Image (cartoon, rainbow, N blue to C red; front, top):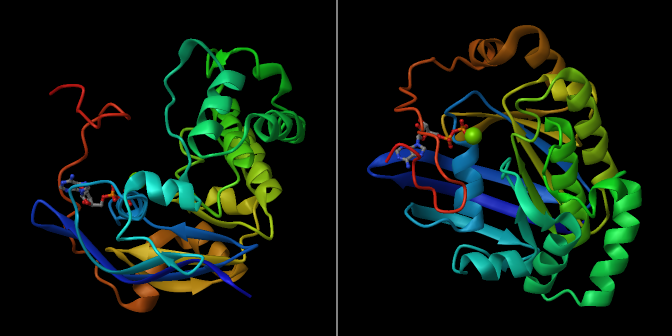
Length: 267
Ligand code: ADP
Ligand code: MG
């Protein structure tokens, strides 16, 4: 089985703060892996470092389908097939979802005809037809926005999809819908990394593997039994079982920032 994403002993820090600390992971093509971790454990940082956001000091190794990622620019990584779920809950009046997708596909070198046909096919599969000619995210519920993100990924067909907190801020019905959409995403040409701190999505999703991330690294991996432990005892139960102290300072809370420029709103 070939490996979609391989991460080996990845460490990363920013502004003198060590966040990832020897993180390793292997996601084969065709599989969905869940990374579960409490707030501040470094989940979003992992996404940022893998997608190539600047500002981090990074060591270790990461590859996509055998190609080294860390030496590539952000857009090279995207064209290689690495995609993080879009996280713009912002509504964009005046830009229709269909136009937006055609442009995003063009940027990734997907021809117009192929893009149009994928938009039709995936639009049907994810029940997005009625949103295609409406403004991007305009008047969509939280769950519909997340489903839209998954639909957008299905059109762009990445090799590795990083879904960061795709279930946060959703009510339980919407979580179920998003979980079903993630299952629907499964493909032999794709490895999915679904990252979250809530265990509730695991009630509706059967990842091939569940990894628990604490203090910048994976401390335990398993299957359904780990989901059950998290559901009943939370991260404290895992910490206790593994003898991990709840000591590390989680640092300053990140200020709300503009998604595109990462400029804090109150700057
Ligand atoms: P998670 O997504 O698991 O909640 P993050 O990756 O966002 O965690 O953050 C991990 C830790 O790194 C937190 O303690 C956070 O405060 C800190 N951190 C994140 N970004 C920065 C930054 N730009 N500067 C300093 N500390 C940061
Ligand atoms: Mg996060």
